[in-house]
Length: 481
Ligand code: SAM
Image (cartoon, rainbow, N blue to C red; front, side, top):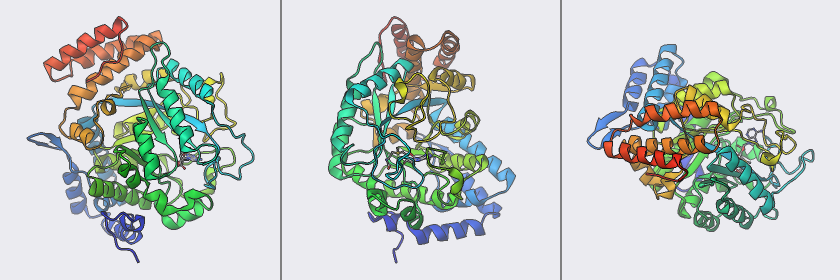
């Protein structure tokens, strides 16, 4: 019998089944306890301090009470608070990225993923370095600056050396004014040694989805292959941090298990990272299971409605105010619109989830990892964001300036985002408008930049930013604060 201990390095202790069950019981018991709910909402409100604005977030027990609560007025209060926190710490910037699928060779047996070993219906493909180059040029030509590379797990076909070679290729390509300035990596759990190598290769965030925090289900959903080892997978972020990567991204694949269980587990994981390493997750992703080659999402019983999905996004924002939240093109335009307001801070655009998909004229589906709902071009996504009051940002400054881990969190907590991330967003948006946007998008964007320039609080920063914007207009690139 394991005991709950957020500081432990044993998966069963920091994600403790007994503690989750007790949390769910407590949440259910208190879901109509207005006094408690109000006090939790009060605790989560951002407050001014000497150094800026501060929000305490919520622990898994408090947040689970809010998730269990079904009182409509209280849910509206949660949404309002999530919006307020989002505005306070992130402003209206939305960071843009695209996934790049390197290889769909995989030795695992994940029952929800079409890349599983036994699937003979999909062609297996792995990009050569020449193909990586072509994909990256296609991505640069859309205007992307930040990628998340994706790969199946296969020590023979996609060993760490292959991943490192691809990262190197990606960073080396300079095509017209294009550049990939940040490569995030979503590959299977690996060793401290390999995490060190990824760190040395200059990666941004190491992303690994837990899929499910329910150990018993995890073992069934991953019946074969190295990913079957629940503890090795769950303890991966600790090894990544040991290897020197201090920006890590968590995620749950919603639909596999009961969402209340997953939510408590996810927050416990965040609390564990904070307790052991002094810094919580850099990002949290919220994928839902989608249709794919031989995968039918309706065979999983725990699918969640759009309403519950929105509530989860709002409560993640409230609970971990400094953690970025990512949403992919798995979700439709309508769902994305809703959750952007509630706390999502990063979205992908024009994604192709096929190996080699960006160089094909038509969106191919043969090696697709999942069905893409939002199929708009990057230009369309950028325009839509601006029309909805957001600033699309192609900024990658933080990690290039060494503001990772706790240093990024410190920036967030000091409320300096308006003087740093905000101008960076405007300058990178300007680059996009100059180099890649349609005329219609450019006109909307130029007006937005002019208006938003006024929202930079420090005069000196505003003047420098305005000067950089002029230089970008005459062809100079890559300014940052
Ligand atoms: N192979 C790596 C691993 O095992 O963690 C990571 C890469 S995998 C290509 C990226 C993620 O896609 C998985 O972690 C999983 O959550 C998600 N995924 C797999 N099948 C999916 C499906 N049918 N619908 C939506 N997302 C899916």
